[in-house]
Image (cartoon, rainbow, N blue to C red; front, side):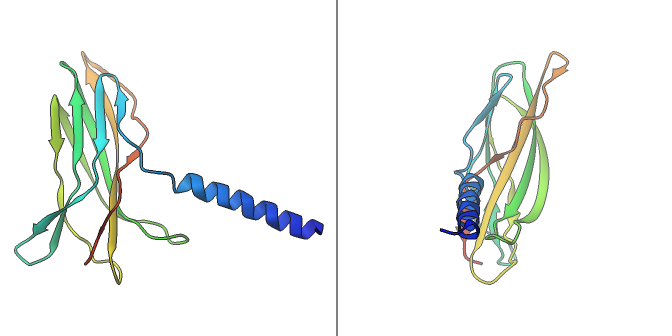
Length: 147
């Protein structure tokens, strides 16, 4: 095998490895400072009065007593490589205890065919005047829904 072919083969292997890491499964629950936050898979939530489909981007939260969690949620429509995912919007929440947050939004019709939507969440915890740093973003599973 020539040097050029070896380099090309090595590049292909490296690209394949990088792609498999980038396409890893969505993250599960993230726990920090007494709170666990999980971005749940978005679900179909009916239609609005104009007949547009609705999607509920839910977040499961469980905090021990005396802790308040601030959550940053970012919503996306997934696109295949080489196109980047489309940013749909962000929402901030603050809550405590054990709950499931709901964030119902209209389905954006941004392309032909199905839409693939997901959300990323990160959070920080406050207790007794001390606030933790932001966690890394955790990605939900992807909902594929016809538009």
